[in-house]
Length: 326
Image (cartoon, rainbow, N blue to C red):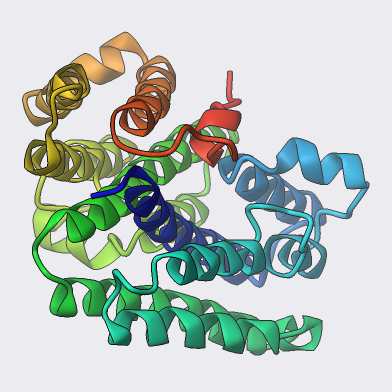
C-alpha cells in the first residue's frame, strides 16, 4: 500500500473518532450543567471539559465565557478550531475523498453524507433539547461509520490502518479524560455523596461505561474501580488496555522491514496494561502514569508515521497537548 493512501485512511478514522469523543464529552457536561448547582460549579465543569479536550488555553485566549452555549459553539461550530466537531468531520471527509477509490461505496457515502449534514447545522440547533439530539447524531454517525468500515471493507492493509487510527485516537482520549477528570473530581473538596455519584457516573457515561461498570462490579461507584475499568479491563471497548492491544495486533498485520521497533513499543505498552495492577498504578501516581502513557502514545503515533505514513505536517491532538493537571 502507498504511504499516502495509508496516511489518509489512518487520519480519516482518527478524525471521525475525535468528533465522537468531543460529542461525548460535551453531551455529558451539558447534562451535568442542567443540574441544580452554583455558577462556579458550572464554570468548573466547562473548564474541565475544555482541559480534557486540550482546548482550555486556546479558548481562554478568545476570552469566551465558561457557559454551555459559548463552549459548545466553540467546540462544535468554530471553523478555526481544528478540534471542533465541524473541523473533525470536514477533515475526515477530505481524507476519505483523497482515497475514495480505496473505500467501499458505502463507507464513502456514509462519510460524505455526515459532512453534508454537518454543513447545514448552525448555532440555533445547540439551544434547548437540540444540543443533546445533535450529540447523539454525531455518536450515531461515528458508530455507523465504524460499522460500515468493518462490515464492507476487505480485510487487508486498508482496513488495518483505518482501525489503527481509531484505536490510537481512542486511547489518547480515554487517558486524557481519566487524568483531568480524576484530578478534578478527587480534589474538588466535595463531600456530598449524591453529587459525587452523579459526577463519577457522568464520567462513565461519557465513555459508554456506566452499564458495563454495573455488570462488572455490581456495587457502588468508587474512583479506583472507575480507573481500573477504563485502564486495565481488556473487555471494556474504550479502555487503554483494549485499545493498545488492538493497535499492537494491527501493527503485526501491517509489519514491514522498518517497523520492528514500533511493534515492540506497542507490544510493551499493551503488555504493561495487560499485566498491570491498579494498586501499583496508584502507588506510582495516577497522574504520572497517565502523563507517561499519553507521551508514549504520541511517540507511537510518530513512529507509525515514520514507518508507514506520510510525515506528519498537521500535528495531532495527542502530540500538541499533554495533560495539564498537577
